[in-house]
Image 1 (spheres, rainbow, N blue to C red):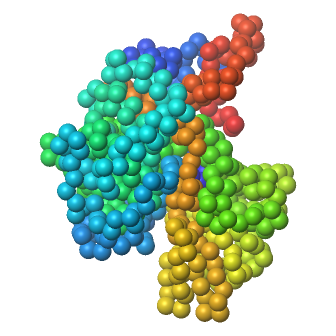
Image 2: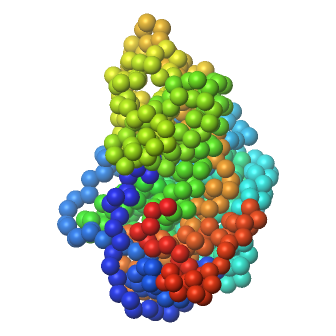
Image 3: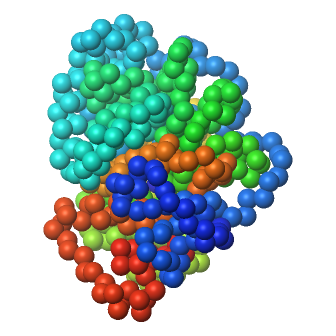
Length: 553
């Protein structure tokens, strides 16, 4: 969930002032009208927010797209070979943001692969593949608990389910399968959509929730502890079903979109819209757009204000401590910690660790983020300068090889190494799988990597996302992201032909403000209203948007 990429690359497209009346149902629920290519500025007139704004500067250039994982991921169709063992080289984006690793049953409870089982729900339907369909009752309780803290999404469900704005939509999704995302999936179903779902992370699936969704009739292909072959097999089972073809994609990491683009190009061309919420997934969409190979409109949810601030900053501020405490039982007062990256995720992690009394240093490539860190009271260093002294190393960049084998060799005995960034490439874990090093699993998601001289480095979640693999993420935060995703799907599916071109679009400020306003009643918060005179003085509509698109929160 790192945000260190992307912000500098997004430029708002200049647009005309032509205003067209919108008929889409999303606006009815968000009390807004979306105009085609209208610019949102301080002088906007009543109720006319900016449309989802395509990023400027993507001039058509015909070239071949080359993804980093292309050869590994698509050189062959997944087979059963080695699928029982946990993957050691899962793709980058299969370890992306949001969800909860908590589960009533660990994947090790039953060594039989779900692919080798024949299961059916109480209605006799067997179009799913989960760990144990009998866990559905426990999963239903988890979903009901999550609903209590996702009031805005439930409110949207109640408002819109009478009109069924997603009737006819066939949504294939690849996200973390948790109680919170289950509330989103069931909301989409209540609004008229047919859904098939798989997991974007091999460790974050709650088995009982996957069972509850399957019992309710949603085709789910996921379980905690999938192998790499399982991961791609599940994605393919969601997409490739006789008599059913998806027309919408909801993705988290870009793996599903990439799979459909590569393996089923004819299906990809008929997709009506893609909603993507991760750094890597958005980056892949921009690559396709620049090469004129993105043949469908796509919504960039990742760079919405509510996603960046709440899912990244505030969420990680809480979940970093949860993950570290559950796995290590370490007291952090006085510990020396280095956090690699001071974007929104890094800011949240640093604030939490500082509050516990840790001595925190930052590494950064961006001078602006580095200056922010200095003003917040943190030292900005190079990793090599402190690697021998620190007790904990946390990566939050979304980059690769942030912590190298050379640096791992220089760490002191007992150093804790973990990742809070987007992918599992930040720590060079592959370099640790050598004959001279011994791996010792001491508890779930905790490995001691032992050097020949007896030194131990504590590696958490094999370098994958800590808060997803080892703990939980606050339900309230996921409610914000899920509401945004639902509204984006409704907008794309109901948009008249021609409103959105084959490009990547940003969410309008008005929608961000609407999603935020839905969550204010939770805190009994009361907004101040502008007078007519004040609104005229500022050049604003009394109902918003209240900030221009270029405003940095």
